[in-house]
Length: 341
Image (cartoon, rainbow, N blue to C red; front, side):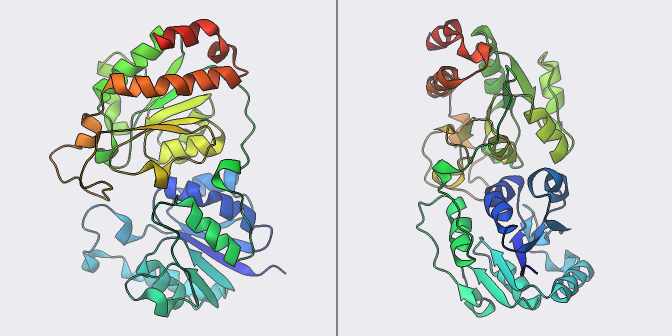
């Protein structure tokens, strides 16, 4: 019988996607349970079919009023602790240096508890690990945990790619969970028009609160209403353009090369897991990287990123795709030449 492993990743879609290579590889060595937000149930059949998912929307992962402890669902949290303890996990791991994760592992009576300690949380861990260098990608935290668990993972540049059938279109997604990570919609509209003028077929996806704006702009956009629906829409594309957010990470793991517009977050930490992933960064800001909130009335790191600068960085990305693509539309020389102009 395989030993039992609990993996904890309680944050966003992108964070969970970055953990996916370890979750998948762990199933060869462990009976794996994943503690994650409820949307993980949408991802489980496709990405981790042998994994048990415990859905839990941790109150400290919201962007507003996260420390209003009197509003936390204490009854639900107690039931969660009891369920974890009843499972008698042999090991538990969190890649986030979060004392709340580490306390959860301790209260769950997990035999071996692995994590990166902070603010005194070493006392909750049996295997406290030194953090990778500050410049390392978030994937490296999961990779280091994998080493400790006896689960070797490949480097980020050599992760295997999902095999795909060419579809002949680009996916542009204008949304993000944080408004501070959203490039102005008018910029996206101009970019989409330029792409179409160069011969590309473009499908626009967006968040629900952006759909009316796109419709008024004359665009037939789609706002997926679940993570499963988003995956289905991404399946129709050959490449992805969008903000630093969950949809880009999902696109990469599905197999789409990604082009990401970075504002408050850092590409060295959060570039999607695809060897052909490229990016453009907005103007420098003394507060970058930000976490939940912008120090200004608008995210200048994105509002100051022009369409022309983005187009200049996007052109080589599309050219490289056309050189390596089996998709006739992306491979046509005329498109590449028109993009250069």
